[in-house]
Every structure is written in C-alpha cells, then in structure tokens.
Image 1 (cartoon, rainbow, N blue to C red):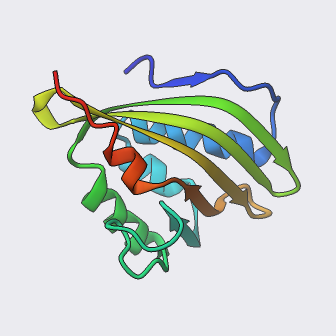
Image 2 (image 1 turned 135 degrees about the horizontal axis):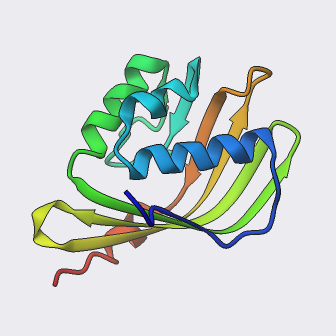
Length: 147
C-alpha cells in the first residue's frame, strides 16, 4: 500500500519517533501482528486518553492481549488510513506528534478526520511502552462526510 504516511514535520531519527513512524505505517497497512510487535509486553495504549466510546472507563488498554482487542474492535471498520504528521517533538524517551488521521469507513466511501497529538514513549529496548493519543471524539465525529 502506498501513500499511508505523509511526514511534514522536521526531525531526524529518534527511538520514539522511529517507533511512531513504524506504528502509523503498520496501522495504515493493516499489519496487526507487526503493530503489536512494536509494543513492550506491558505497554499501555490510550487512544483517546480518557473516557470515550472506545474506552468507557478511560483506563486504556494494557498488555498485548488488550491492545490486540483494541485493534480488533476499532480498526476493522476502517478500509483505509492516511496519517499526516505536521509537527514532531522528540526528547528523552518520548516523541509527541501533531497529526491528522484520515479514515475511510467501510464500503460507503465515508471519511472521518481525527486531529490529535500522539505521544509515544519507548523503553530501553526501543519497544513502545505507551501510546497516548489526545483527541476529541465529538470533534472527530463531526468531520464524517459521505460521498
């Protein structure tokens, strides 16, 4: 698959930035096993951070099994992703990316855009220890368009 990630942000190699790029590419290309392999065994995914329809209690998804269930529950209805990273700030073990994700939903051709700040933190092995995505579900739902 091509055209899955547009990197408009400055910034060179950094362990968390490299993990973020690999994560976004694996998601956009539908490679669940490759995506899961990027995470530490006890990693935490909060997408979005806080209570939402994707995570009613707001505690996130911790560990490989829970993160895999998050993939299954939320990525199946998306037929295509495109990530556009506008800014990237890396320091220490973390990288914060300002991004817009465009998602094509099912066979209808409907799209939704999610503006977010995604913070990836890696451990000493370079595996993702946490992925915390800050976005507002109501704002994202308001962007749904149909052809």
